[in-house]
Image 1: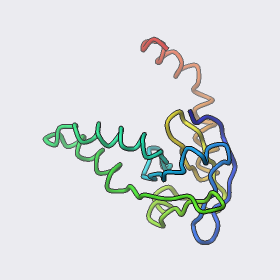
Image 2 (image 1 turned 90 degrees about the vertical axis):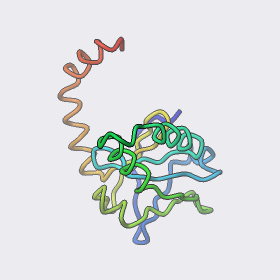
Image 3 (image 1 turned 180 degrees about the horizontal axis):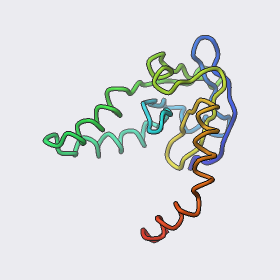
Image 4 (image 1 turned 60 degrees about the horizontal axis):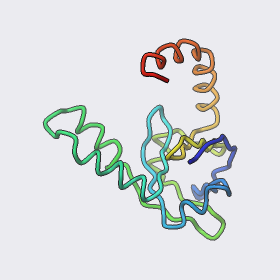
Length: 143
């Protein structure tokens, strides 16, 4: 399980070092794709295959199903860790997520999220300010 929040730097070649504690999970490779809320998602191969299987079962007759599958699948890229535990984030994904030099790597159960540090701070502050409202709504789901 991926949890926690980590500050990292994206170098001039678009490389990002993954947190040391998670690197072993990505030895077989990883998939990085467009995420939601202007971040990137990084999945292990196993988690990615599970998600891709679910996406393949969405009805292609529904426009929102097609749109979500395109967002996730067409934007995806296989990546491998180099000897220093870095991955290369393709330019089109860095543009999509507005990533600059300072990034936040957030562990979110079965994936890592990569955020521009400024966007993360804005998002996190907003969620923290709405935490009671969010908790109340999730209470209806049994959480």
